[in-house]
Image (cartoon, rainbow, N blue to C red; front, side, top):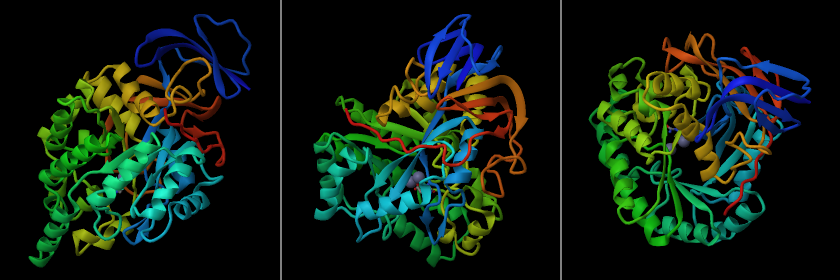
Length: 456
Ligand code: URP
Ligand code: ZN
Ligand code: ZN
């Protein structure tokens, strides 16, 4: 099986030229001008952008959470990812407190094995760090290729660990040259504010937002950054939303400490005014919550400055019926929103088409940086010879409208309903196979492989 993509505008973080790419089997084998090769399939990409397939390093598929499961499973979630130009996702395995990391991994494999349309990997969320968990870190890294360990400084009573556990985990992860990632918000403060609002009968979605003010994120980000500095572990903050937290990363940079930062598409595009809509605000109930316009400006600036290196989704969809679990009480609304299918086109439209970022920066934050940070480059996130032929072709002029009526995610609303976007994914290759062509999915479930990652 071979595919020749002809006359496209080939874009990587450092290049932008018109040329051809030839994929043979699963990998890219030739790049050049007017390639004279025979191919099983030839794609004319004249006028289109040809880029490394998107990598979304923050998704929650089929995840047990807040009394229910996220509504996209591996089959529907990875199909939707491909439709939107994302060719690989990294999901989170959640340890159950009191149980082992490996039993959680077995559980996640039970749901994912043989079901994914696109490639995927796992982060391991450590929710109970103890002497037994400690012994599981090394085999997780060396044998399973799971090299990033997620921590929650919030969701008290379910997922949160305390600082003692955090330091212990960081030391063990550092010993193994792996990385600690964090949901950095102050769980105790949030817990207090939720209880206070409930006692006062303040129960609408707006109080979800008011229970997690910016200071709860800035404080936790600063604490995490300091603990990472003390232990020297490689560190990454997931779904950073606000100026205060970003400034903690800037503070770390003053002492030459590197902290990787991810934001998500929703924090760049949506703001907290959506919570004023009492009947529909639950659609945007996620943690951390949407912030203010000044935070959006800070995040776009952070991307430009290279402090924010990744734009992910934190895709964690729930059907409207599931969101209604919190109809009478914001604290019972399952947290999360759907975006796995929309990230690439929204960022292209709002970022590249509106002149806020270059096409090279777009490739960096959607693909190459996550591949590098999470130990998959240049197999993933690259258009180099020998790299997996995970390729997205975008028509930069095509306009379309986002709607739940036409999306492929298993969720009955869109957080971006009616948004008009410029730039459309037309063709997607996954390891050399045409996976999506003009809106039609052409790879079966099971095509997606688990990707083992490595530490440097
Ligand atoms: O609201 C969110 N973000 N739901 C998913 C879990 C998490 O915190 O990432
Ligand atoms: Zn989180
Ligand atoms: Zn998440």
